[in-house]
Image 1 (cartoon, rainbow, N blue to C red):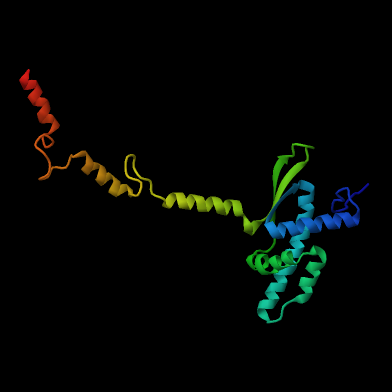
Image 2: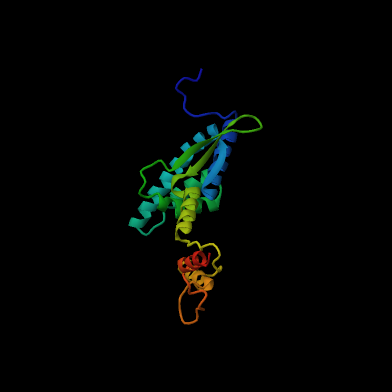
Length: 196
């Protein structure tokens, strides 16, 4: 029995499990969001949180002094085996989460997979919530966009379109207006009744 034993074996040998978690971590640092099973997501979260904390401390120490913390970068590279992921971790992610005291990732359950019924989850970096940022930008652009009225020309604003439609209908009374169009509708109705 495995009472009080932390961590999941994920039905793999130790080396295979380490390689799996390394590959998932690289994918998370590269894409900021990955879709996997719940068990793998929770195990990857434990590894990724430690890597981000190490990078955050290294970057904080570098700002005080001028030297780069090469040792922290080498320790991260020893696990990740990917230069782009390490540079993304130290250059992009660590400065962005500098003020956050932990909890850099989020696991969102997505339901069951169609093929084998495995529980799926989305593992994403909290500060890189791209879906919500895109939705917020879309709503902001909708709020600033002005809609034109029906029948107005395509290049016009709502105010200028309404003026053009009023002028086109001929309801303005001016020197160009003809006598027939300047007659009020009430007067024309009275004349019809009087004619009967």
